[in-house]
Amino acid sequence: MNAGKNRDLEDLYQETILDHNRHPSNFRATRSVEADNPLCGDRLQLFLKIDGDRIADISFVGSGCAISVASASMMTERLKGATLAEAEGLFEAVHAVLTGGLAQAHAPQLGNLEALAGVRRYPMRVKCATLSWHALKAALRDGAAGQVSTE
Image (cartoon, rainbow, N blue to C red; front, side):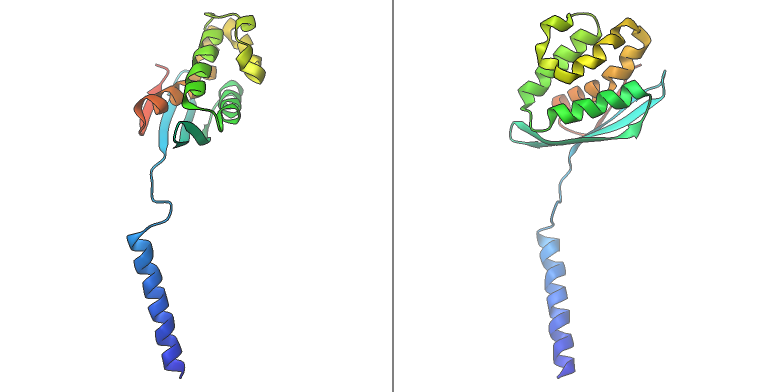
């Protein structure tokens, strides 16, 4: 009787393994981009999960200065659930404000990202604040793994 139970258990495990082989769970690549700013030492990897025309999930790992990490963190909070068009528009607004191409008053969509606007007074730090945003732009444009550098 015990031998029969062991055989049933072996069959069950075998079927589970075969089923996962035929139909693996979570078997997909997510869009990811590696980005670095050699002048400051910022390095990050951005991950995107796109569902239709929306950013279903966005995250990052890495290290860098406070401006770089804060910018990436704020970006990911803001873009979870956003449409791809909203993400593109926000990239343009953030980039314009940080590079002096647009006054804060003309970018009301920034919300708490407006805290980054003061960085534009320090040109060498603009690359820190925009690193994650350029990684986002590359991920949306290329749709695949890639690498971005500020240099």
